[in-house]
Length: 166
Image (cartoon, rainbow, N blue to C red; front, side, top):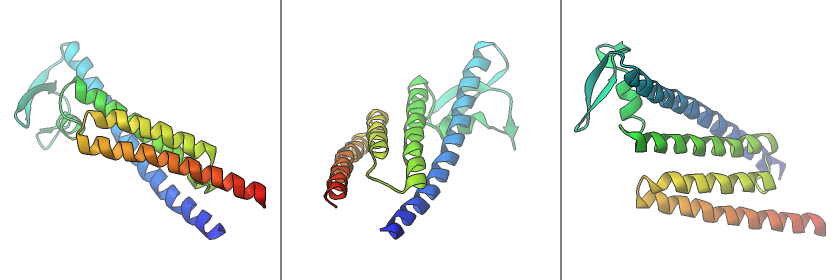
């Protein structure tokens, strides 16, 4: 039993740090997008770049080898437009909720705790909201994750019954 707990803690630590890095990158990219809106609104110099079949206006500011870095913030993080910005923000919220789950797991190693199950339900609801803007397959996956939260809750109840029986 203790060996399983250590495995949970070990792999949860790895996932926790991975989510932390991805969340930090996401925050940087979303901040760049917000900065781009402010830059354009304030009337500073801009340029038009092509992303897919769309031409969009971005700040004429940071270039690396003649490539505007805002192109990466826009194309690699949902595409242009306010809907993509909202989707990016909901993805970040979903990642933060997942990070909380794995933070608890790396510290306790107890997957059937009320804190993990509540966090899992919050994460799965955020995942469903995020996935609605993506496609039906991702939304189905999000619903499966939500249903799995009830499996965890059932495991917590069985664990409590087992602890009180012994």
